[in-house]
Length: 164
Image 1 (spheres, helix red, strand yellow):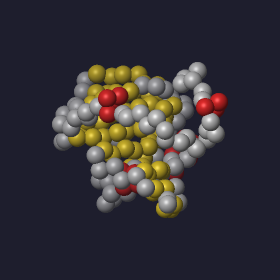
Image 2 (image 1 turned 90 degrees about the vertical axis):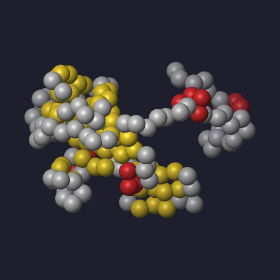
Image 3 (image 1 turned 60 degrees about the horizontal axis):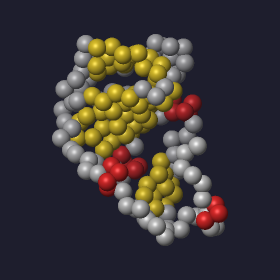
Image 4 (image 1 turned 180 degrees about the vertical axis):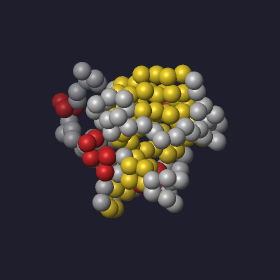
């Protein structure tokens, strides 16, 4: 049985958060004491996803805006993933143009700052996790469940090939 509250669903062994359409992400707000300073267009998800091993945030940066300070982390790597839009990202002394589909991983000690130097909003995800942690598995961690039923399939005739 699942428990539903606003945009969050908690089920047996899973948690879901519905961030909504990208255009609605600008409505998210953070404020002290949750963050050192107020922030618009950013929302942390760890508490909704019960994900103690990592933090994730959804982010919307309006056209012409920028991160107001350079920062780095003490213990966490960060991965940024640009979903839509374009801008610039500074990692240490290096500057990258970023756009849809761009990923960057940063070690804790690397100073970072970014800006949206375009005329459209910039939407991105940020994932933080302990830099000294290790994921064992990926494909090797998966286990094929041969006879587990798939809810939308009535029989083998409904099987579709993977991909296009």
